[in-house]
Image (cartoon, rainbow over all chains, first blue to last red; front, top):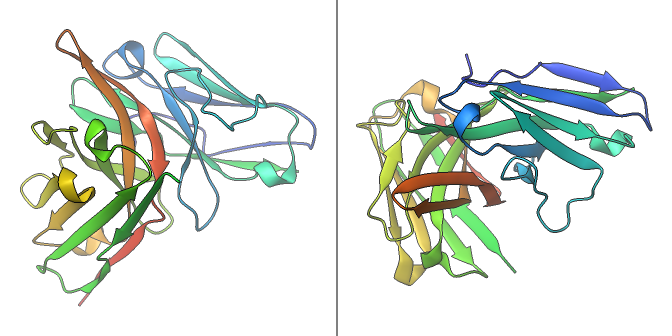
Length: 110
Length: 126
């Protein structure tokens, strides 16, 4: 049972947009910065978003994110089959004094 | 280029020990917090531990407390994870990662993990 809650899977057609939600509480998302990661099978995770909504150098603006209260959302536009991967949210939890992750969301581009 | 390379994984029996290493290059290692994250087969990411840039602040996940010890050698640009009393459920790919974090006016701010190694596999089995 992950501290942060993500949908197990999402899907959308090529070219469309999809959003992935990440729900937490005041001890984590509500008072800390959220980051998002993309992971392909057999590969290491890759940082997509940090500090709630900032993209590292080299990450296309196809990826965007926002935070409101105790929830965060990752948006991916112009979907391609190459975007099929697992996506994770993460943040710090003040009560646990620990980094916490969501359970991950598998994106399928139909 | 900026790179993290883990090593030290392998097959170990329950109750055994293993020491993982992570060699950093391409960035000022001593300026950054560093962290270990693991991923059990078919499961999600699980944070294990982090150490501050000077090594004076360390946190562990409950699953690691009392059994795992994180350390770093800034002169050798290396991060370590000593794992003792290993259990079958510790079987996972272990990643080291560079952690973006600061302490400002006594408040800890965590921003994310921006550089990851390729991972090293630990299998605990009899």
